[in-house]
Length: 156
Image 1: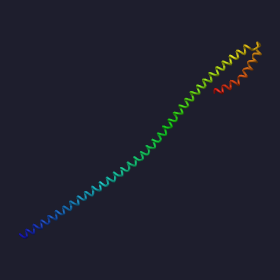
Image 2: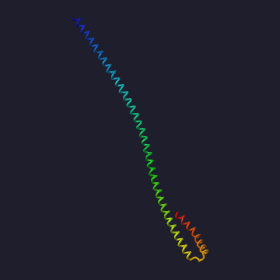
Image 3: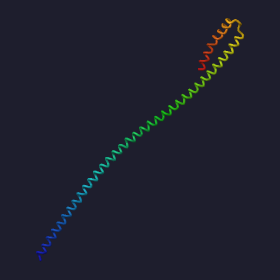
Image 4: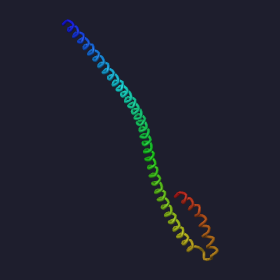
């Protein structure tokens, strides 16, 4: 009975050692798996962080480029507005010049009409001989030329 008891104790101790060894093996396996998962998670986190930093860097570059484009667009808009004003001013000046030219043409026509009327009057009052009449008209015309040229310059 003692031998059976010793034998049972020995088997019990062997079972406890085996259970303890299995527990250690199981713990080691769990720790190994946990370490692998932790390493995998850390690697994934590191990769994610690097990707995030890369994306943030690209976003910062894109934002800087967008700001430059906004500034350029603002400058182009100002230039466009300025050019539109210049075109409007040029059109206005052109219209004023056209109106002034039309007025000058009207005045010149009026002066020519006045000159024709004066010429008719001078012919009516001129001597009867053609050579005398030519001389009288030519002298009057020559006297009016500088006046007419001055008026044309004024109107221009």
